[in-house]
Length: 125
Image 1 (tube, rainbow, N blue to C red):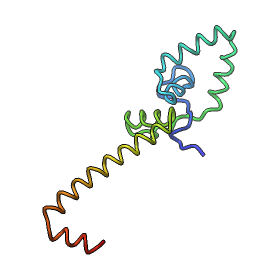
Image 2: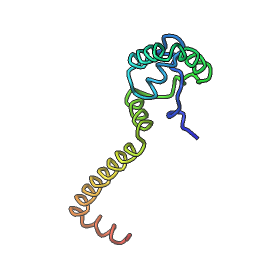
Image 3: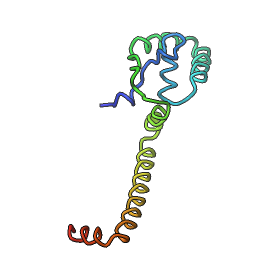
Image 4: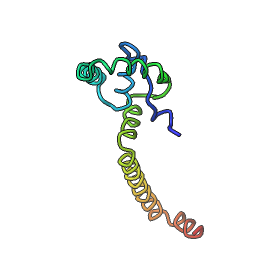
């Protein structure tokens, strides 16, 4: 089942009509202006077939919950997850390895300068 943060919603806060284009823009990370412009161009190319599809999507999609993202950074993070989950997982793994390395450096510093702590850690192993 999809997380609420990886689901396509209508974005009524940034909507011009029903919020479908702004929802697609939020989902993909593309500027809403370009999504709207693409919809207009597609309407002319497809002979108006996109208009009923737009309204059907407007009726079927749920409204975006107002509490979904805490800040803009979290919104960008979830857009990256939707675009490429494997890359995002690699980035998180890399950050955790870096945190682990720095923690090991701190531990080494404190253990090497504190013989009593060093003996206690060795006793626990």
